[in-house]
Amino acid sequence: MTEETHFGFASVPLREKQSRVDEVFHKVASRYDLMNDLMSVGLHRVWKDIFAARVKPPKQARFRHLDVAGGTGDIAFRIAKAGSSGTEITILDINADMLEVGRQRAAKCNFEARLDFIEANAEDLPFSDDSFDAYTIAFGIRNVPRIDKALSEARRVLKRGGQFLCLEFSNVDVPLLDRVYEAYSFRAIPLLGRLVTGDAESYQYLVESIARFPDAESFRAKITAAGFDRAAFTRLSGGIVAIHSGWKL
Image 1 (cartoon, rainbow, N blue to C red):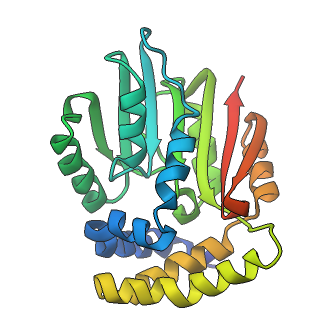
Image 2: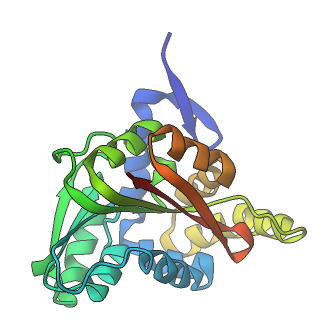
């Protein structure tokens, strides 16, 4: 029997999901950051500032950081600014178009010498065990076909004492806001996608993928099941997003 998973609200063979996700991000890469601003009314910048500030790279010692699904560089640039010449950041993404956007942005910001861009899969990281001091993934894990495998890989490549951090959309827990947010997501965001990028279908998938993602408590349980200690989460903006964390102790 063919193993299936979800692609938005649709059921698809597991082996097909990654290629379908890749196609979505090939389509949206050039307008990805603009659409983030429009869809979140700029809030994604605040969320990312709060998220990246959790990393705290040291000012003197060497610090190796891995940012997964971070193609355009939004999280990596923030960490690079907070760190020092000893802060080494690897940006990994499965989508070449997203990585190219990140490289171009890095060149404009004079960050290219401090960042390493790698095209690879979050489920099969091309690094040795115990390689990194911290691992981040922002708005990417819900698009991974096998989330449990990605979490296991995250723990494998972290050093002892290393921190796992994930920023992802979550379950709104404020009465009335949940209904407003749902209506906005399913009515306004695909329309914005069509008006700005000419592509409503990709943004329909993105809002469906948010709705299908586990609630904060359930995702914390997954992080614990992957072997992380002290799994926790912090809700932001009424639960629209959550910062999840865990430690390899």
